[in-house]
Image (cartoon, helix red, strand yellow):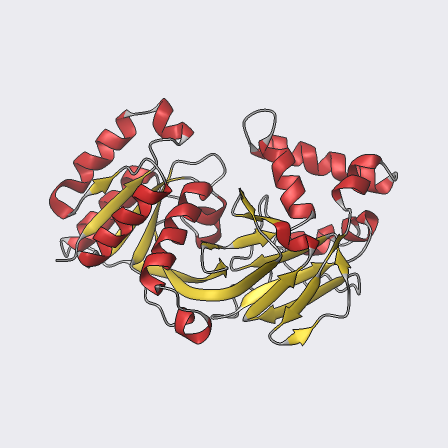
Length: 320
């Protein structure tokens, strides 16, 4: 048993535009293992169960951040089998290789993957044949209600900002920069864009059993990777605290956040009472803020309560 598997998203824009990519990956993969293209989330979970039964050593994910989020969610759900707390953190996942074919590839950048999809897969297959060692970078997954696993979670501002980013045209670095500029300008001059974006949601937040005294937040953010995107290291403590997740409660008006953007970009603590900043194992969010959240660029409906916790350590294969 063992081997290498590729999970490819047939609905991703890159794969639709370039069907030859999947054919090329299948050729490189050869006899090392299967290449699967599940058509929906149910199919993805069935594929992951089969990979677990085969004791696959490496799972290669062909797609962008959204594809990685869905694949990781299925892996955690299958391998953790309902575990929470310390039991969830002890779950051992197969090694993951990101085959970059997304638009932004924030997760790949966070762990230092610069290689093309074909080069990364070739590297993994050569290693499987015993010809080359693998370099691993681990990150702690953020798991929400045992169902959704990723690395960049956010309510409120982050949820609304990312929706704006993905609406009305293809996402790109230029589009993101333009939108950030619009929000900053609106915050400085008291515009409606920033006002609406930073509307506070009522929330009761408990961090590792300790209740936060505030009762409303424009945003609650949690990260298992440092870089939120565009080089902004909002979760500056994530990488340096294995087994923990970095949580922030944003309480201030838009201009208070704009004032610390330079510190976020430099990966430094925000150093403002307007932002609660903690490294935790678990965050319980109840109230309006729990009704919807963003995870790695995907938008997910919540409910009355979210349990956001440190999940397994995810071993990423790195090829620069």
